Structure formats: C-alpha cells, structure tokens
Image 1 (cartoon, rainbow, N blue to C red):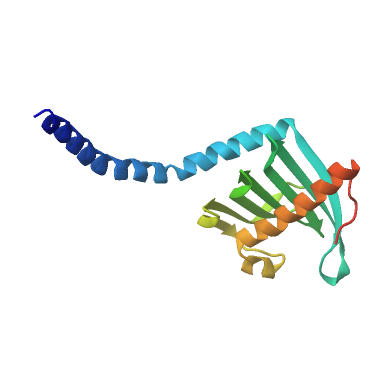
Image 2 (image 1 turned 60 degrees about the horizontal axis):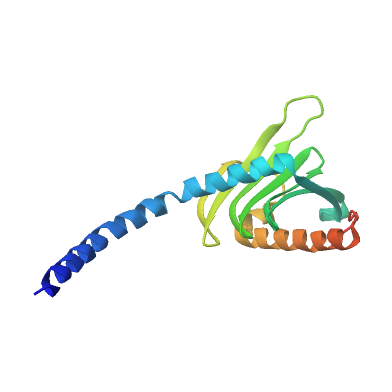
Length: 184
C-alpha cells in the first residue's frame, strides 16, 4: 500500500519534468547572446589590464609589405581575446576574436578609412556570433573595399587560421622571450 503514493509522486514529478524542462531549455537557448555578451565584457575588461602585443611583417598582394599588430589577452592559461590590425594605404583592417575555452564565440571585422587629419570612418564591418563552432548570427554593414576574396572565406575557417598563427607565434615568444618581427 505504501508504494502507491510514492509511485504517484514519481509520476507527478515526471510529468512536471516533461512539461518544465523543454521550457527551461528554450529559455536557456534564447540566452545565448547574453552569455556571449558577458564573455565579451569580461575579455574586454581583462584586455585593458593585461594585453600582450607583438608584430608580424608580411606581404600583401603585389608583394606590398604589411606590418600586422597583434594584441592578445590570457586568462587562466587560455586566450580570451585577440586582435589583428594592419594598414594598406589609407585602409585599416581590423579583426577581433573573442574566445571561451579556445573556441570562438564572437568575431568582429572592420575596414576603416584612416585619413591623417580627420576622424576615422568605418567603411565596412561585420560581427559573427558563434554557437557550437558555427555561425549563429551574422551582422554586416557597409561595403567591403579591400580584399574581396576574404568575404568568400568561412568566418570559422578564418578564425582557425588566425588562432593557429597566434599560437605558433606565442610559442616562439614564450620559448625565446623575444618579439617576432618576420613571419610568412
């Protein structure tokens, strides 16, 4: 006789779980942007206090030399944000990657017109939000004036290439304790 009330309680608990868990899951899945916003805010705050910088000299199209400036910030042994920017003529290209456990969660890219004695002007920009290493949301403004082939490259593959480059250079910096001034 005692088993009946326990079974009834378990049955009610199962019904409640079946009804409530999908709603809680949907609420959590809708909060993906809030989670990314918190990660971005934390990374930006850390980068104001503990950013590392190095430079890589490369060649752009037509063998034009380009000096990339790299900034990155570590937290608990992992990179939480890194940024790459460089100039080609009067255009500044900027890429910013926000990471959580070495996985990209947000990526920003900008092309900025940089006149010497005027305000900077963003000509083109895009922001990608990632979930499970795939683009979840993609926002873009303006028209790209620089390298058109970059727009055809998958944002995640671009991140992987840049992150690999960062890790290779970091290992050289940490090993030799000096700045790298040339890379291919």
